[in-house]
Image (cartoon, rainbow, N blue to C red; front, side):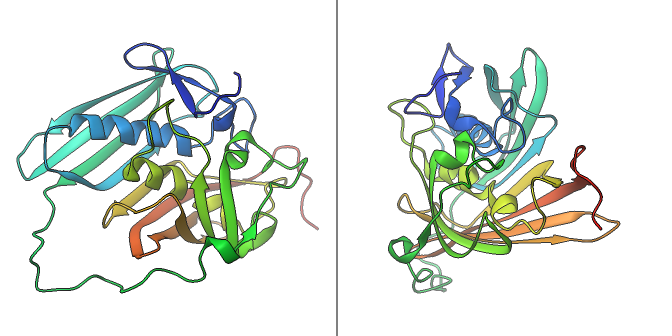
Length: 271
């Protein structure tokens, strides 16, 4: 796996070679969930080509860790329709299904609605006043994906446990010479919600999402996206991360991730 100016390089009709930008924090052998999630979103959008439908909800199921090796992505329309469609996409490595996505696409609401926008303006302050974040060297956060995205924290941070608020933008396209679409950018960004709002030490604890669900109000405008995330963990139960994604004009999407929480195998018990 070598560096590149994109997260993936295409290799044939449906095969993609990951670059160093896809490396995740849990294990350098495996990808962060954001880039392969964006690949699935891209496949969904390709199925909608030629329609006037827009993605309203996409859920990504993570069935196993995605290695930093070639992956195959395919999608199909499961429930066709002129006003509503259900699209399913799959990501495989050497024939094994590792991620699956389902997406509902709907015809956009009429422009002449008797209601106004949800908000008149976006969150403040903007990325210009945020605190730049460089992944702490020597920690799991010091990985290819976080280096391939630019972070400006308004509150919290990967080095601070608890809720986090940050402006985020990808430094690279998903594929060479192909800009990230608004939907792809949304999925790529919100998959980081559980990490930026972590309440546990990643060197001692695992808090891994087996899924990501995103409801999209409208496509975001611009490269900078504002992510406001909160993680809650119930002792003896599960974890949950929720996030609100906005652009400079207001909210664009809301996300949720259930979490598998466990002590890192090599971590000593808390005293």
